[in-house]
Every structure is written in C-alpha cells, then in structure tokens.
Length: 416
Image 1 (cartoon, rainbow, N blue to C red):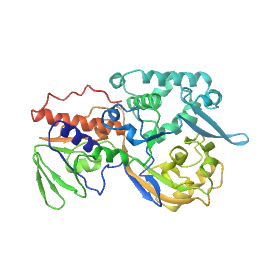
Image 2 (cartoon, helix red, strand yellow):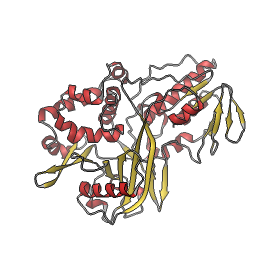
Image 3 (cartoon, one colour):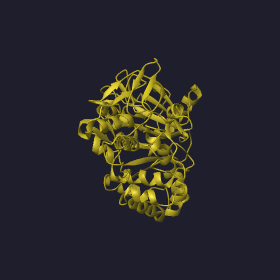
C-alpha cells in the first residue's frame, strides 16, 4: 500500500516510478482470496472512510463501502447465564441509545467520562494528539475516568482486536488517533473485498509482479533473478521484517500477530447477532477470540447469494486443530447457537499483521535510509492503512526534494 501510494505521488509529479512486487498481487498485507465464491480477506480487516489520506488518494464511491454497526455487541456472563449488551454511537445508532445507557459495563459516570474523552479526541488535530505526553493506553483510559469494569468488559476486549495485544501497553497517541477515527467515521468494507483498495491504487502504476528484490543500493536494486535495475532513488516499501533484511541495522517495531478463521454457518445470518453487521466481543474473556462478526450481515457480497460468512480472530499464530476447536467453542458461546457443524472455509495465521505502537511512539519516523534509499510503510507512521498511505506520500515527497524536483518535505501534514 505504501509503495503504491509513493509511486502514484511520483507519477503525479512527472517522475517515472516502477513498483517491484515480490508476490503475484499488489497490496502487501491487504489481500482478498476467493474460495467457493466467498471473499476472504487475509485476516479481519476494515477500512475507515474518515481516513484523511484515503480521501485524498482513493475513489471511495467506487469502492462501494458497506458500513458496520457503529458499536459492539458484548457478551457477558450474567447470573442466569449468557447476557448480551449492545452499545453504540447514539448519533449513528439511535435505536441503541437506551441499551448503551443501561448496559452493565461500567458505572454511568465512568461511561460518561470515557465518552467525553473519546469525543475530545475527535475535535483535536492529529498534530495536537502527537504532541501530548505519551503513556500507555491503559493509563490513559484510567486517567480519563474509565473504571476497571468498563475497561475489562468493553474497552480491553475491543482494543485488543485493534492493537493486537491484550495488555493495552500500546501508546496513548495511537489510542487517541484510533478513537478519533471511530468517532469521525464508521468502519466499512468494500463490496468486493479489501483487495479493491490496492487494486485501485495500482491503476496506471508501472508494477512488476513476482519480482522479489535481493539487495538495494543508492542507484539500483538486484532482484532474486540477478537482474540489475538502475534508478535515481530507491524506496523500500515492504513489511518491516523485509525492510530490516534489505537495510541492515534498520530498527523496526516488534510484530503483532493474529489468526483469523472463516466459517460458513449452518444457520442464516439473520439468526446471528440479530441479523446485524456488528462486532461481537466477549466481556468475560471465556475463550481465545478477540472478536467475531457476521460479515455478510453488513456486506452480502462476501458470500454466494443466500449464504452467510463469519470471521473470528484470536491473537497470535494459532495453527493447530485444538486452536480451531477452541475458536469454534468460543463462537458457540458468543452467538448462543451450536457451531459444531459450521464449515471451516479457511484459516489465516498472520505472523506480522501490525507493527507494535509502543511507548514512546514516534508517529513520524524518518523515511530517509542510507544514501538515496528511502522507507515507506505503516511502521514509519501508524499501524493502519492511513499510516501506510501517509508514509508513501512522505517518502515520495522526500525523493522529489532530494532530486531537486520539489521543495523540502513537509512533514507537518497530519496523520488522521
């Protein structure tokens, strides 16, 4: 994504750019497979149309975005067994307003303080959020007034699926940007899969597929096939692990991993989660899953007509049959239906799904490598599609400036 964004910016400035893609498709981690006419993104992914950089470089209307419910369904262990609480943004989900106000998640005062904190993030600029002293997300939530009940029953389950870590040691700066984006936009999916985002970026860009790069230098790269390709500048826009291999001594964030299972349920989507495309969370943490959603309740095109598709995700790389059985059992608790006969369509273990956003977080890591080698990727900005796109623009701007084709890079533009 970052490399495609950089190439588009260079092309717009009249500079020839070639993208060397190691795999058979563009998009890096943003991919969609088609199995038996089901659309399976590689790991549960969402796109937030509030992303400022996305608005600049993408045709959102052409993506045909389908929003999810602006809220969550939280399953709790009540005195009489399974209890479901539905919480949502009352501006976008007014029918959930009473349930949100009375959900047994935290005290009314604690909930009000958290809502006020999230709303305050939405009206501040990303630059202002970056300048704030950094602490962990957990500390920030406690200082904002969220009590332990609200954190354990709602905020930790939800944010674990966003940060891909349970302890909430992620930077408050990233937390604030996440809250800002959720208040300002509703996470959605393109009608034809997340793949349509990189495919749209790649339109008109010179891309060479199946061309892994072995080494990089100031003025050329060497491919795995021993081909030398000369260039005036080289941008390394890869996953962090590959970037550190190509550029020795480059420091990159630690990985956050996740495993996503996709199921065809034996019941209809209307029988699950009240027929809504809503994130389902476990406020009691009775199993391995951090979240699950009936994708087709929001985006029917993700499955053949009349069929449903459920995604379920757990932290870490989980590849054994025992892992899958535990996920299936957890799904039964979360949806309140038997899942033993649900068909497993595919499993996606993703070792490096996101770069860790640890304290203290620098959301403007340098895009300059040694010599005329540049860097792009979400590990240079924030762990999001927005961060990847911004880093691509920053790298392209740096190249243009160093080649004397534009003014010095302007890093003041916000990450949102």
